[in-house]
Length: 167
Image (cartoon, rainbow, N blue to C red; front, side, top):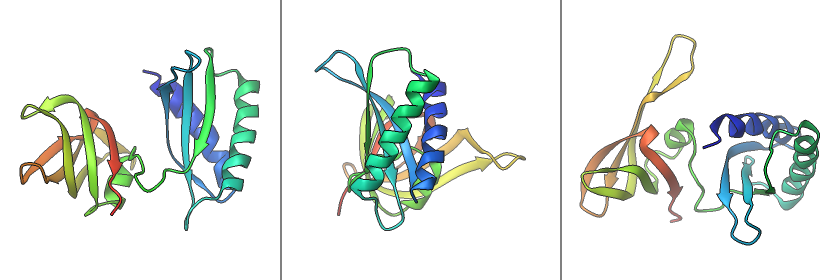
């Protein structure tokens, strides 16, 4: 929906997060029923975990910068949080990092009549181009699905949402 905007916001947030010893896991817009706006939810983490002080500092600084730059032209609430134990997985590098971990994956389009899969990440095939950037168009996530005990290859671009399952 707002992919370019989210990318710009993530870049700003990443610069701020580094200063506080953190990194940005990902960002998304979520509908807010309460005030008919949206929530800009940004997940930040750090090696060994992130603390509330770091999240607060990132939130204050990012909020100020977003207001000054006026990147967002609609009503929103900013929310900076830890990805938690059931962390959302956004990036190819995260799928690689969490290989052999249990995940729940929801898709944009059905594969074999299904939109949801639960199981372990077996492998990640990411195609790297000549400049060293990841080619998301060709990336696939191979998962062992616990529901029907089969392996599936899921195109990265078909994933709507993915979360780790706490063990």
